[in-house]
Every structure is written in C-alpha cells, then in structure tokens.
Length: 127
Image (tube, rainbow, N blue to C red; front, side):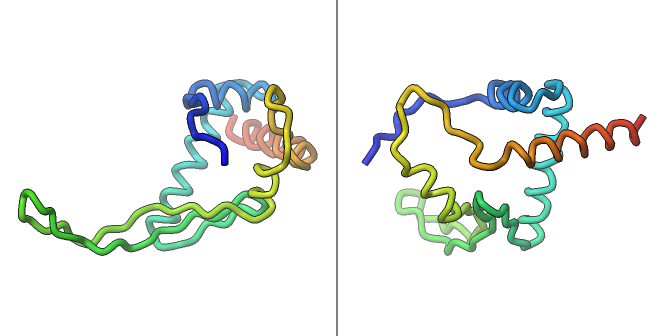
C-alpha cells in the first residue's frame, strides 16, 4: 500500500492547473470553483446526496456524540460530510502509472469542450 506523504496541492495551484487544462481564464475557473463548492455544500446541508458520475458521491452522515474523558463533558450528536469514490474512479487510482506522469482525464476531454461552450454562453448571457 502506498504511503500518503504526497505533496499537497493548494486551492490556488489547483485552480491554476484547471485553468491551464481547460484554456479558461483563472478568474472564470475560480468563479466556477466557488459556485461548485457552494452548491455542493448547500445540497449536502439540506440532506441531499450529490452524485458525480464517474467520480463519487458526497453525503452527510450522523455521528453519535460521546463523553470527553478529561473534561467530563458530553459532545452532542453531529453531522459530517462523507465522500465515497465510485468504483471506476478507484480503478483509475489503482492502475499502474509511471510515477512521473500526471493522471489522465479519462474521457473528460470531450466533456471539457462542452463545458467551455457552456461557460462561454453563461458569460455572454451575464454581460
């Protein structure tokens, strides 16, 4: 099993990479990123499960509160965000890859073209 000491990717770096890959301006990608996370958070907060086909699902899960030993106080029940990767995504992660290569988009290139057209239409409509 691989260790999890991989380098972290910051939000800024992630947005920059997506902008480079899609050919969209960083500002547009940042707006889409913020909107995507806002919609995801709102949907999961309302109890909905968000399923991104080929990637995974986001949902909330209840956790039972417990006693804190040292403070002798109780922690109330609480909800946490859970993510479950799809089996196809897990297979992609498990595929033998050259360590120096970046992961491929696995069929998302055609979707990226559609996405770019949608973003362009939305930007024109907002102007």
